[in-house]
Image 1 (tube, one colour):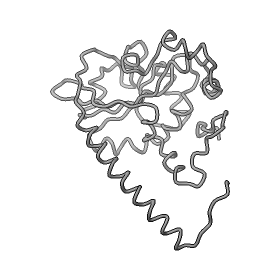
Image 2 (cartoon, rainbow, N blue to C red):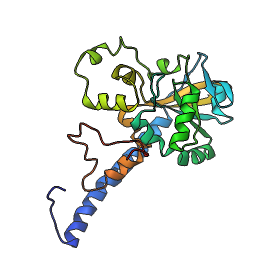
Image 3 (tube, rainbow, N blue to C red):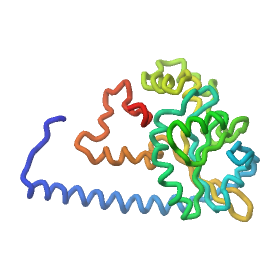
Image 4 (cartoon, rainbow, N blue to C red):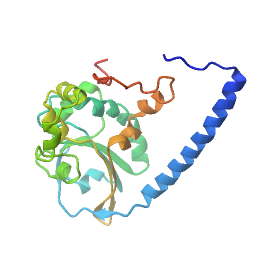
Length: 241
């Protein structure tokens, strides 16, 4: 723990009250951004996609499962992976708890990966999850929605110095860096109206932290995320700590 200023309770409360003003402002700004997300224009999905599910082959519209909104996360688990991405797995630990609440608000939530369905379900069983998970194997879905990149697109990255973290994460999934980074985590939202599927939202990178609740909790501790100078990168699957 780094050295830190120690003060009286009164001084601490004054400092906390000042910070609270900033937190309230951030909350108001977040509410405004949420409104702007809801008002984004929609784009119709005209291409047909098929997915392998536990109930058989389904179209994108059928994945809505009778609801009008679909939230899909492209979990990094490519055909060459032996196990799902460690970071995606850490995020997925909250999904089971969120699914019934999202369903209650007319939202179907599921994960989509390019690995064969049987491998996804076996990994889900290992991790103790139950959220819906479908395979887009053989489909252009991940490619069309920026969740898969070719080696040609990644050429400059792969020909450079591969970060130690990428090498470590690749190994933890039982694949090489090229196949590991070919997959991309994306959270996307669709709406079904009058039989037509529309995309309404898309985010990746730090936009995905909304589903990694442990980061929000760590941000409230004295050390915070404490990820500086961490070549091994601390996150593990919950059964590997």
